Image (cartoon, helix red, strand yellow):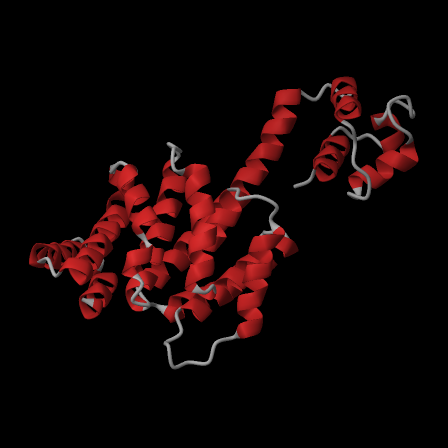
Length: 282
């Protein structure tokens, strides 16, 4: 719900026309206010507060209702994105596909729906096998979306983290290093998860490309992120790749054993699909 829509709801509930609601044009002109209710004009904070005071609408109540609507939308988006992420780790394409009609039927704005469907398609794209033809146009859309965000805020970092495989290894390292430099000292758990996920992916790609010697920076910084309950999965994956890289570089059999132990742990706690994928890699 927008500010204009909520003002209109209060006005109608009080049985007032627009002229009465704006104190006969003493607060704002009727022509201007009419467009506020239609979301064609924005109202200043001062004029909004004057309107609320004049019509005996508690300011805290008005803004709490706006925030409540925003929070519901945010929660709906978060639920969709968590479901996509869970389906990705379970390699369940059908679960992701079934979300599309739910997103289209949701109460999200058209812009939010477009963003969520784009992410849905990107997750499906990221789950393609190496011998499947990539959708270059879709991958470029995601990359354009990431770089249209002016700085490395949470949204940009999360998008890069989720679709890091759409870039080449050297680009991943360059962007990943900038993000690590900016957030390595953060205490925000969600940002720490994103950092570890980026580091884990970069270590995995280093193994795949036989470039294990080029990721010391990411191993050192992964070690700096202290373990806590919410990070157990990502720290476990980090521990796996760190040990496998060390095994590849030094032939240290203890590192190989540590990798196998990590796989067993992930499978034991229910991360079967992901655990078996690491087993296959090992």
